[in-house]
Image (cartoon, rainbow, N blue to C red; front, side, top):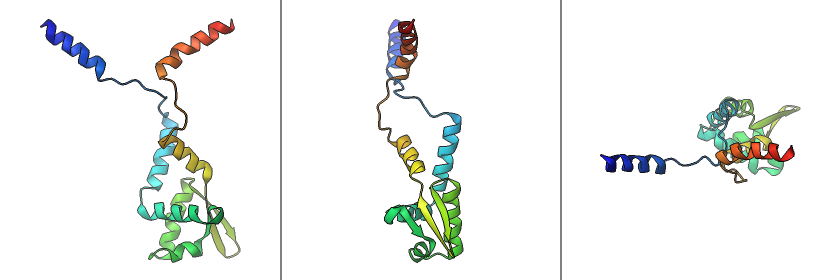
Length: 137
């Protein structure tokens, strides 16, 4: 019986990994889910890629229509979804509409997927905060 208890204790302590950064909150997770939803269609991923590949990360809707075997209204619907998610911005110039990749949104998405700065473990932050306050006193 003692051996089983010892094995259970060892298994319980070894299967848990420590969080090394804070998880996203409810608001951020809703925003990210909306972004991922907008990117859930291969056509929209390709549209964003084509826009980002153009000079100044900007493309006229007329150029985008030529890249697909889809109707112009279908392309426009996909572009609206990307714009509503904040991934592209829309600028009407005369009769043409230009779409530009929103770098801020793309950087935010990239930072979520590949955090650039290693964070200290969450448990260290909890103990470090009181120590910093005590040092100031």
